[in-house]
Image 1: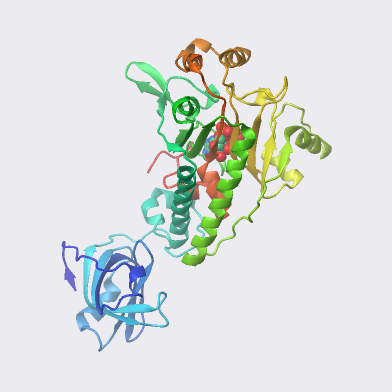
Image 2 (image 1 turned 60 degrees about the vertical axis):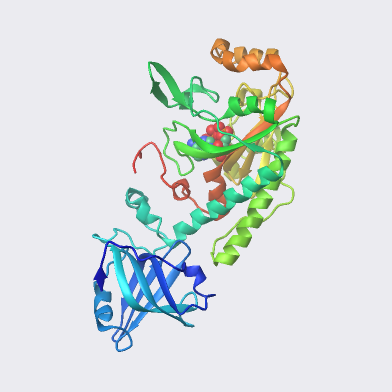
Length: 431
Ligand code: ATP
């Protein structure tokens, strides 16, 4: 054994070991398990791609190395130099007989939760030590899936001529309704954290036509649920010269692409999860129809009320579907009217979970001003936005997809905190 501050440089990742002709390799990673039998000892190292088995047999490896293995600590970062050999029993078909083990960074404490457990009792204990929690395979898989899904969605947007944008996250006014805003000090003024990129992405359709943004949205959600975060990631897109039906078609494409990506990825990574079935066309139900159906189940709801998850549960709706043509009164001021009572709007649902909400937007200045006045809003606070309507605002439509909600559906995860790196909720501001 040699203790050293010098990190021995890796020459192979775990996934490269199977297909190399090199006999002597150096790998690095952190220890995920140590097992000792009488004359044989195993250390499993994890790296960014997977696991590597180190096998030390008494008599065939250096005695110092054999003796030091039981003294190693899980989670320590180590490097191992040794001989690569094939092994049917090892997880990736190869194993390393160690010539040298370097402890690069020793774990000083035992993790309060089991590294290999799939489900654990206290999410709070895990979140308190999130960086270590994320070393667990089942959780890392979720975030690797997240990575693949984001790549495929970005690819979809680029292939369809969308431009990736970034809009301000410190803003002066609310867009979705004032109650769920986080106020911040901005020099000597009051400002807010953005609930959505709404007005800015709409403005950007004036020059780029098709824009998307993948970024944080901030919602002061005082309720404790498994589907709300105070900081969530939203995949927003907005498109000029189209209406809300065109946006729903885009969502169908995005879901299809995401499911294809997911299917390929879990097969190639041997990840076992239940994933949603592919639907070429996603059914559409009008708000009117659903309210009627809900009333028939005995719930005391009136036309104009919101539709809640408990109502949808009762209807037993499964898979993806759209609820379209919501009452004007339930939607924000920038949503276009379809008639005196309903709007050109939709929510994308999966079972009783809302994944996305979108609409045709108002592109006429008088119309949007009237809407704001009807909703008792101060139009002067929105001068910065209304003034661009004087310069040929195109008709446009768009939506926002909650990334964590979408991932919950794709990976069959029940708690939204499990698909957020560092979740923020009413009780949690660290780590
Ligand atoms: P809900 O009624 O479920 O609270 P919402 O109607 O407030 O959602 P929108 O303002 O329409 O949501 O936001 C668009 C999408 O952003 C939602 O469909 C959802 O996927 C996601 N989203 C909104 N708020 C949150 C949140 N607090 N945590 C996680 N995702 C959110």
